[in-house]
Image: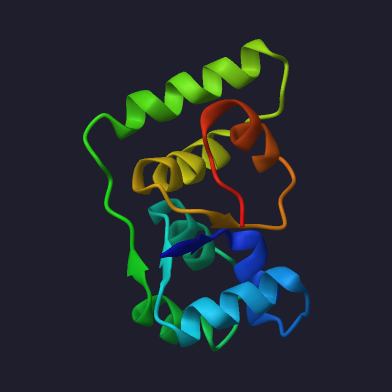
Length: 124
């Protein structure tokens, strides 16, 4: 299993190219792409959706929220903020979903590097 962030999925849906897009395409073909719940919310809230968005979301498994998820996400975000590193609430929730499931995240968003360096997130 491998997860994708909305930064990569939006690029994928817009027909862009890149190594992250190749990873998403491969994961979709192999039926191993999963989405953190917050990514689903981000994609559904886009005011300019693409036609391919809903079929994609309907075909991909959404990660479950594990007990203690909210606390762990808050702890990790607090750790990064105490180090004066950028850590949005949304990114903390996405990162925690992947950390809890022990799966890597495909993303174009460089802010996730802090979660990888200090919180155990695996980046694809």
